[in-house]
Image 1 (cartoon, helix red, strand yellow):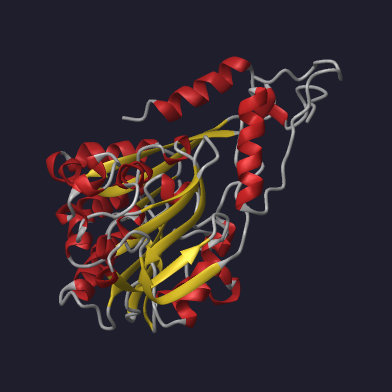
Image 2: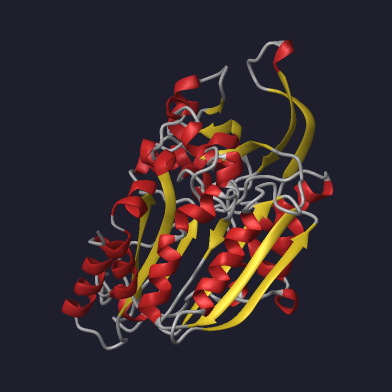
Length: 393
């Protein structure tokens, strides 16, 4: 791949060697469609000292009503698991799980285009269902992986235990290239969804929502609440229809009433809707734009804009110690996407079973923020944008 000038890919390439002559070395690409292809590629890269970057594609999913882990005794059969290839998208996984009347802890994304067997799981994997079923890595029962020495191995609680532990949150791509991931599945309960949209007096609304975060979580709600300078959008779900948590609906209704009473707030949408399961909710709001309610997540991702993004995990104590300071920090950002994906079963899970940072167990909210700059930005502007996104505190 060559860059003719700094204009190619716009400001993203200001750090690239954009004006090199055409005699620079080319990037080599390999269409690896089998384990053997991966092995040969790794051997070639090692022999010629070539840096390797992996982009996963694929579409294989297999549901196993019963499954015996490699190395496990015959008595170690487990039930209801789903094996996916590295590049299988979450939309394909949702569909396979739904066809077998189960649900799976998934990475929610517009159109389901996020891969289910690669970076999401190797980076720990969080989900709107995390309060109910744990992190993505808590739901993996087996990996198969090609190691840097090109050997293809299986890793689970009976075989290559250290590798299995390391792949679950400790910089997975450093240990090899995944060729399959086998996930535990769960029963497919009905859910209740809450949708809310309001234009607002910014500081007062964000202060209210921030103060209620722990109350939402303690009463079974999880979900997303993106906001910008003019509006707040809330999309929450709770297991059960009606919710299993007896106070879930009253907590939500109390929030709606309190927000409507704030000066300058105009509640434009407040809907409670039952769904037969997570699949139907996902299809309505992340795939079929004609059926979405409130915030359109299929159109919400920023693209084609120069920016630097940053994210932070916020533990429960952050909300309990100084809510006003946290709310002010939210106000200082023009737009952000906080999401409640902590609490529930998460703090009770044994952190020693995975290699990820134990901080994940105490997480209540994750927040993603972005800082952009104009197309004609100077190097100093771009450095400032990157600095802001990396110094969020």
